[in-house]
Image (tube, rainbow, N blue to C red; front, side, top):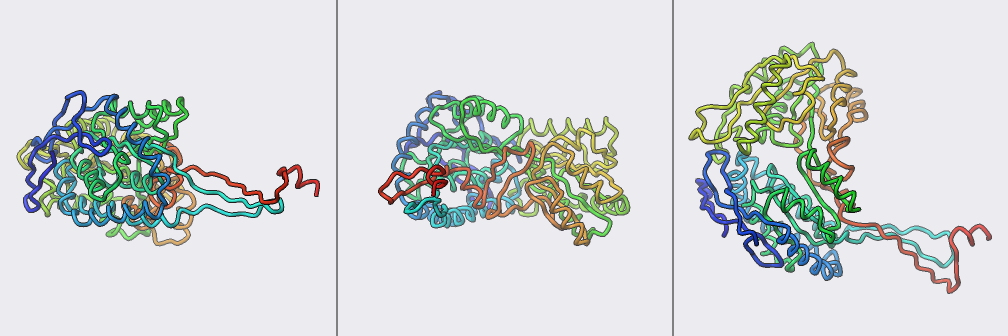
Length: 508
């Protein structure tokens, strides 16, 4: 049963959200479901299937069968399906955005931006259907031709999070399909509604059955079954560092490839020559956009001591003007966090910050009197006098909490930025071109912003990070093709004689 939304009011009709296996919508063999909750008001949006390993087995079998034919379809022809997906996403953009806001909580403007990201990715990856280049190179022997080509990995298992339920799924599913793979996708059980809608768009686009399979369920059950399955060739995962490490350990033992994106502890550096008005605007957006629930969200502000007090005063004033509420309201600036567990985790870190001696400038508690009082809201929170070794300066909180760290010079700021275990995104505000180029060289993150916040990645550039943020792979851009393809070296010897590389070369 599908979700229906009145676009003006964001009214949700409840239903059951089930699996899509081999081109058919199927209830889980377990017969089990769990509620889907609107984080803005606590209302039940429906029930999502809780699938088991048996459901995963059926999905993988369908994918294996479909991929054998799909890999033979020319890449430009595969790309035509993606162009259609992009068109359908564009036609349904507002409806999809309303779905995202209802089940995830982000404000509607951001939800529209997320759907646009999926549209852009569909168009970009469709273009890669005609740009899936290999290389030709001269052979060391006569009458011999040498080249490299890309071939699909096979069957891909995707495990995606709730904070960008359609964007991250598009980052992974679209390049996987255009390169000739089949998919089994397990979305977050917190956001099954837009997952179903996305799969229905693939269905509308005419994608051959079995190529994309949706298995709703939990990580310990359906997710673990994907990782363990012998016919899954690659796991594409975005989520927590703890879960990603477990996936990598198990997949490694099975000699299964993984592509992991596991969060960040991102910092914005503000130097003494920065445009403070711009810096403040960017910090507010990066720290409290998506209620701090982005892997690229800014959770640290490393500020030169000469401008620290002025920056803090401007930040406090800006936070006071933020409106908390249901993201369906166009005037809302900050929506709810995803669920009660997230609310409790954020508050736990705030208590730790206070106990370790950080100074609370604003926020620091659950927001009361927002909406009907049943949503999961936390006040935008700013700490100052934070030391680099404090817990709130090192661990990912994943909520609307900023920590201000004072620094005496540029070199110390770079050092503080790099001392955390994550390396996803970083930012610096400065008017000094020399500092700009040093920062580009020395900031140990996969993404670096100059005079902009830590969020706002574009789909044609590689997305990912260093250290414990991931395992070296990248989503988005042409780099994503390396995740979902194998390189094959091809030699064509037309000499009609036996030629032995290196041996015969050295005798001539």
